[in-house]
Image (cartoon, rainbow, N blue to C red; front, side):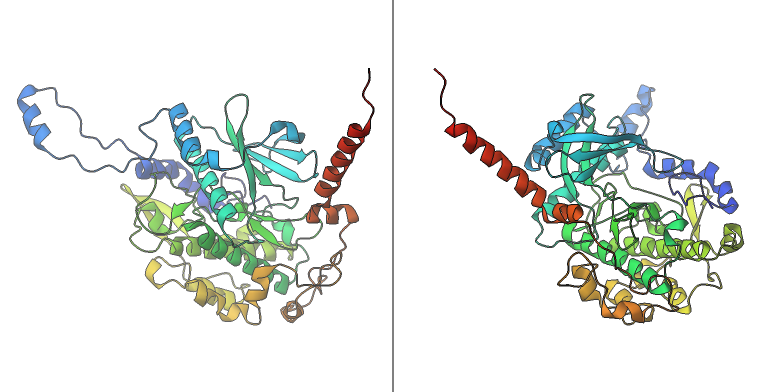
Length: 447
């Protein structure tokens, strides 16, 4: 089965194809800013036209500036307070990488010359308004994460920002060697308890993002979740913060992220009189739907995606005149656990005022036995042997049935990796430089 790529038509079932032609028009109608009244050339009607008050138009905070002036403004009030990348400190390992069949933004993998840590360069095509907005939001997220006393192990960190010689800005994300969760083969061999742990880490990451940034993520989907390590799919991190929106108050811009599989209905109509965090929880629920489906397909070789999609899609987007329409099903695939179905039926619903909040989600019977406070601190419990991460006592209790991963996180960490985790490479490098400087200072001066 192809990947469930939410930014392309790859992996989307046939019952989505009829939406493709109308989708671009829906977005255009929602984001259009051409509602200004036309000028009337007839002077007899000019006075009447001037007396009419034009309808207020929501403008982007940077619409009235040209590109360079906008970038200068962003740097002046935000960028100059954040670490600036030093290109000479990095070496390029891989460039122009497309992680999926469709590639909106090729990435480049860099390695720091001193500490050996990996980073992913994310560039922004600032000739497009939504890309400028995404760049600004990434810097906002970076600023909030650096100032916040709270650290989340389930949020990918942004190290620094910079600008290439072609004047294209970028940020450096920490490198995650795992794949994103839109590929069903990531779940092969995973136990049901292990899957619930992944779900819980995802929920904690989203909760932490709300608390740390004071915003919603705005673009929650399987593509924006990644496994931290390729060695074993042990825990996940959220990525891509360019779709941030304020939890309350007026919108910062008319730029918003949409996709036809996880976006909450109220987002399309810009109906945000309520707490916007409920939109993220809707997207979280829809994402759990797709992840559970991928998990089932990966562990049921005889299954076919089409057999399980018909009639069970969590959200369908159509068009009725100028307004988008939504259909949320009342039934779910028969192989879904009853507890998960009950959870989704309380989250993936049109009315944002009656959706479960984060407290109710954590207390739901689907996550019975899971210790949220312990997991919020670390994907691993505290152990004397840091080279062999242990598993929490409740992890085995969640294995129903047990599978190859009886204890979900048990793999050795090499000495070299352990040094990187502890930053010992930095210390050794600094020590070597200091020794060299001291040695040079003791050399006799030449005549």
